[in-house]
Image (cartoon, rainbow, N blue to C red; front, side, top):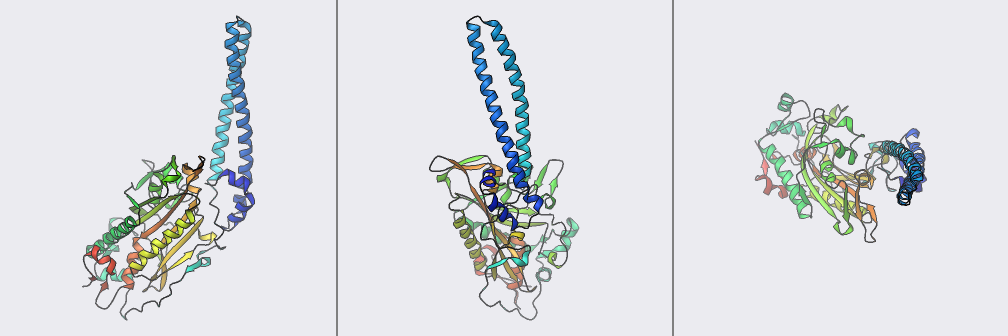
Length: 427
């Protein structure tokens, strides 16, 4: 959620930044509406504070009048204080209504893109930040897409998933299940080696948690909702892990806060269809290891690049061709100020598949969840939050199967062999 102070003091910058997202003029006009509503809040608060001061002063006078025996004047002041209390009560209700209205308006505005975010309205407008500079490995003549490899080697059953639940819920079997578990442990161990503290959070969260990290109301249609209990299945571990620090005041010496967690993730992917959803390309349930950082605002962009480097290291160890995109304003998530996407090369499909997003949210989430810190000067400020997939397993498995297939079988990258216990998948 954007800070009202920024809307007031940097209105032109905010509007120009939000135009990169190609949002409507009606949404842009909310900025002026919010500032006007905040003016009303301020004047109402001032009026309320004055009435409370008057009421307190009169209450003290009443005590003095009673002591001196001036009961008639004391009773008159009591009536005035009673009237003031009723006015104060009404102003309290008015102030709460104004604040609630401001919050409802604020949550409709996305984050302001960082100055480096390119203009654009769709994925094709994203900027290639880093290209894959080596030749793409050539596949042998009998190469297959991952869904056929999964069937050939009895690794994943899409048919059983449909029987049990529906499309988008695959069943991993045998070495396929072991490969999945190996990747999870590999990613967690690499994060631990980089200083991340492991968290195993719930995969159901309440509405307050989903709202605090920006999934509600923006992504409500993409989330699975348990109506009876008013819980949401998480779309990413970012939601519960970041919320561990909701309503928290840290010290500047607590930074950096580095957390990692593995969870299954759930997304309805409403409206998805066609070749993009085949096999492991797009699922309703998938596993992911997520890294989350809480940072001092002065250091968050250095941290973002450190996180980008961590994901690149993982892909290098998995021996997968990849490229990094800087997302344009129109393709960037609602919460993000700057996002880098990683794509790995799907050799058999002949296209790039997104496997990670690494984002800096600046104060956007922290403002929603009241995540603050006391700086070295004693002042309280909002922290910056960041997160990244490190990594999302479904498409990593897909591209590993395709890129590492040979005539003899699917070769396991050396870094992963200690986790799988085998170096090749063969018939």
